[in-house]
Length: 322
Image 1 (cartoon, rainbow, N blue to C red):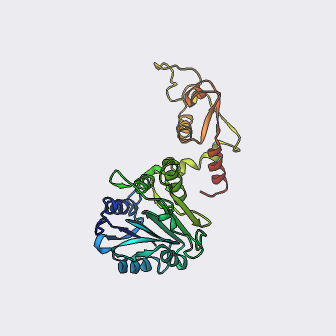
Image 2: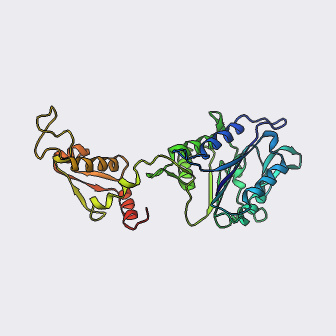
Image 3: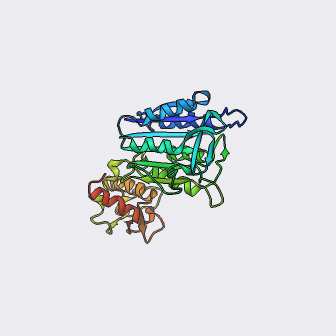
């Protein structure tokens, strides 16, 4: 079971925001299904006046209740610095009672039986999330808890392109920006994508986790399908081997064609292999040897070798980890 609670509040009394509801609606649209239309997250949305203090607390308890694969909490709205703790501000906030403490949210996540508990906050002072409210900056994360925040505890979270800056990048990462070769988007690849996009003078996102493996947040179209990727061990005897090429691998090398043609001429089986090798090349898994590209590697009877990334996937296939 994969379920999400998505909270977005624009209509704060006297403290209006512009993008939070749009953030939630777009996150819901992307997370609900994978690229192929298969169901991903079953989400509940709390928007504006629905997101009262009581409703948020009740729904957070319901989110982390029971067990399953992953429970995900996303919040876009105001955050408040309450000394040694942060608060996500509810629609019905009052002075000295602004909403739900981040330490309370973490407590619910820590005791949850879900394998993964993911908390994503796009609000000011969101970096408080995961800190122990009594002992300051010491992290106190239960097993399987993952936290991503838009900013450090003493920073604001900005808006751009009708989204929060953080959420704008989060959406881009989910629809492919943070996909690995097989199309998987994980919290780790998401954070790496966002971290690289925000410079040292921008708001700084934070990532905290207590996990022994990553979960896929969304499946995008693979850059190389698994069937083709698993052929890598049949082309290379070892991860440091050279796969030798010759002109028979080049599909345009046909006797009498207008292109340059030399024997041995294009061979159907070799051309099919070359098509896969070129996919490896385009995605950084291999490079031609002593040639500028794969065409010349074939026409000049050179070869190709695996890159460090290619060796990584080679060994994953060899060890039957894919």
